[in-house]
Image 1: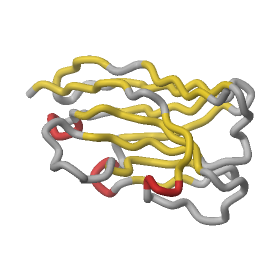
Image 2: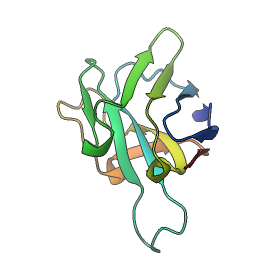
Image 3: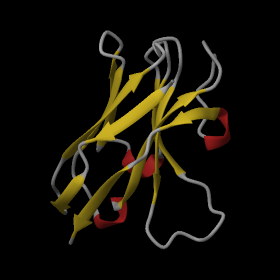
Length: 130
């Protein structure tokens, strides 16, 4: 059974930092793009989770414009774990953060559409106070 388990969320003041972790089990994900998405509170019904960052199997990265320079995605394939280092956090970063695994092995492009990701964690809450 494939499982993705996020951890590391919490409450932090604006300008602070958090490091999220996503530990995978049941499958080796070294050949898959891994991504982070988020869903803000009181989000409009039907609105998809927002793409935040992803790292391909070849270590290429792609970020949401608003987090570039503040967030860094990384992965440790030996631990089957992906990380999201979040610095200079803003109140608008408040959301539940989810990690996800691309459904296609060795995909050549990084996709920012949640429909392309098959496996999801349960989410971890990040709250940034002003």
